Length: 434
Image (cartoon, rainbow, N blue to C red; front, side, top):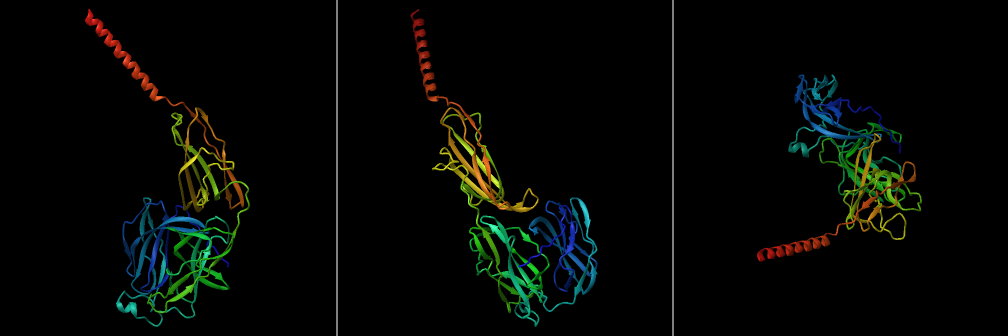
């Protein structure tokens, strides 16, 4: 299935102004929007603006994460609702806000307000909810499809991808559409998780099967998907409910989604100890104790942190206890572990999944002298190169001192004290004799 990506310019510090719909029917909603960087400080000196025919009212703000070509931009949106008093072509009244202490005034944009449509909602009365007009239904000739899309059509086992639903429609105004919660989504041999605060932006129109379709993304559910088994799979089969703009509860249509086909590749064979990590990672080893106070009988606390772009959910502990294999130590005792990941900005400039795995070990110090361990290997798979990579875990050496024998020292001190008391008694005895 061909898929076209929209390419646009979104400067990090640029404040943009636009309207969500330049042409709309009287009584329908359109918004004027200021879009700015997430870190921008914005204030609204005035909540409403009007030039007589058109009034603009502040409607609130939202934070939005948009994926464009699977590069992600985090933006803050200030939204103003546009209300027209009559049909015609009008210029929006100037709308002003302050961004980072500077005043920003909107450009003079033109909008066209058409005659009130019979499909426009007219209030929320009992009759509006249960009675309809002739044109409220979805047309029988309407071409409607809900298609599941993925960020990749080919992936390795363990490589995270993004998946989402899109509505393709033509010969009809955009309908309301929502996933049927009673119908499960089929993600065979994939682990799925809904991402919060993420939205996908796609082209307004696309050529599909020889026809031009308008597109809308179902941004309520954007999924992270991790393949667990090699093979070809169809992802995202479920059902959606679609209905006309009035939501009249009549002639609701149920559409079965078109799933996305994806090929999952088996990881190459590896003879050594593969950690289970898939991505690009770095590691650090740290001793938590004060290095100047370690003595025999103490426990050395060691932390190993693996982090980077990719998936560490199935990673094994890097300092494994010995059985028969190499690259291990019988001294290490794992007492705590934690794993986390998030969809976030990466150091490369793009966005993706960043994972952190932390392992906490305890090692008893039993011998005086220098405690040291040979470096151990952490092996992960890099999906970009299609090969395994190795990180050498350098474990710091430690000087272990002899612990003081506190009990014997206390016994000796007690003995000396008793000898002192005896001397005093002898001196007192001699004194009284005199």
